[in-house]
Image (cartoon, rainbow, N blue to C red; front, side, top):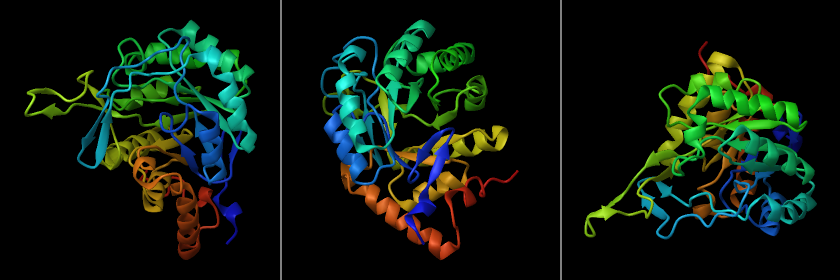
Length: 303
């Protein structure tokens, strides 16, 4: 079986395989993103970038959790004015670079998207789902009307594909997914709001108290979101949450995802994970008789 069997497509974004670097991991430096692309990632999503530089929260910002990590980085980033060079370096790989942006208003999202387009990103991912920064992320992404306004405005302002990354920290993610129906794809899911308590210090471990839980612990939640949204809407979906092996990726694909994002697993397996996922997925497809990723998308969904 040829490597071309791994190809997939999200809207007009053509991918050599379904494995994408998720936002927030090794994606603030252009050379690091370029290296990850050269080692097998089909695309990278940049760190979430805002209008202005943010220092984020004071340490501690990461805590271990059973089968995962809890982080509250605080959307630390250099600001949009300083990020063009990093994107240019990453694009030297000749593979797609997806610009992640966050904001609190429709106007700010539009300004950021226009600037990202000028930096020649291949798609834009809207961070509507960070669970631990007041005024941004999930506070924006929990309002269906605001989500609809943001997505609709950006579809008018920029020609590149728009991906909406949604939060699981809502009563019904379907309501938010339907509000974002004009997006070219939905990214499901971001981290789950969580805390840890230091029983000796008698206080929360993280300086921000709350953080976002990622890793294998949230995989069943991510799968459920992908499954429900795909079954109800048939939208293009990129699955995220707890993916460490090709079996994890296949579960997401069979639940309705056309591609998946890898994040926390890089902290334990390193950049080599992308090459391993590609090789193992190709072998799985050959054993099971699948000739393309399309053959698997949504086949596990009971209508």
